[in-house]
Length: 341
Image 1 (cartoon, rainbow, N blue to C red):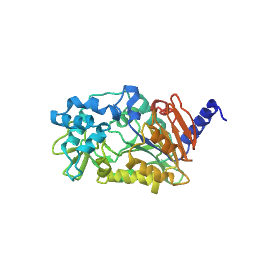
Image 2 (image 1 turned 120 degrees about the vertical axis):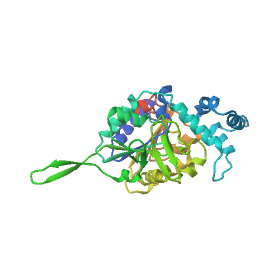
Image 3 (image 1 turned 180 degrees about the horizontal axis):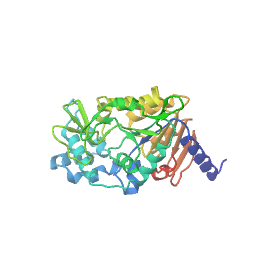
Image 4 (image 1 turned 45 degrees about the horizontal axis):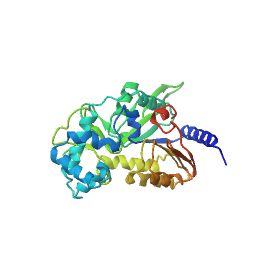
């Protein structure tokens, strides 16, 4: 029977090999923005952070569902949602409060700068990064670190959403001996924010635009941020989310532009509309899933550990292509992985 040390060595070697392979994409969850408490709150912390900033009626309604047994703010919002076309105001109250809180935070950018700079060294034309987070850590890190990132918007003060930019390629002219040649630029990060973002707004139900990350919402425009609740699965079928999710499926499950590896960092693997796309990828013989999270529930860990083309790394246990072993002290963390990708 292999020793614990041998299992960890094999795990680290396999992770290193996969991260250095071709056609790698990344999926970031809240754990990638937490930064050991110096960044943004995790999902289970959101209610404690927001409850005192909500109007009394909204706070009482949500708290009553929590007191009645709702498992966190996500389920509480579900219970308050009647499923109609027009969602109830609790959702927008939570979204606005979350945005206001995020704009008061100034997390360090160093690890995200390292992450982007390493991705920019890759030889592929584009490097897909899918994010489930609302914060602007990657965008601010790109500016500070001078890394080219495409996020689907074009323009300046009120940039408009133009999903075709993800399909465009940049070239640099080079003077050859007889004629001018064009060298295609590589390592351009394509950022797909699947649940929206700070600074994203929808005006007149069809006009998606991006403004300053710390600006208040200008009514009647509404924030394009999908708070944690089941309605987010339905919202992702409307623009601009539909374009972003189509690209996610295109990279993972259906093509063209298929990835060979998807690296999930800080994502608890509990959003079924996300997991359905990942399951589609695991149906391919040339696809590997890598999950890095400090903690996963027993149900989640058991679901993914059995896949022969999956690796799961947490603090207390790991799985290597169906083999379960001990946990790893830090390989699950964004801080460590930002130096490994």
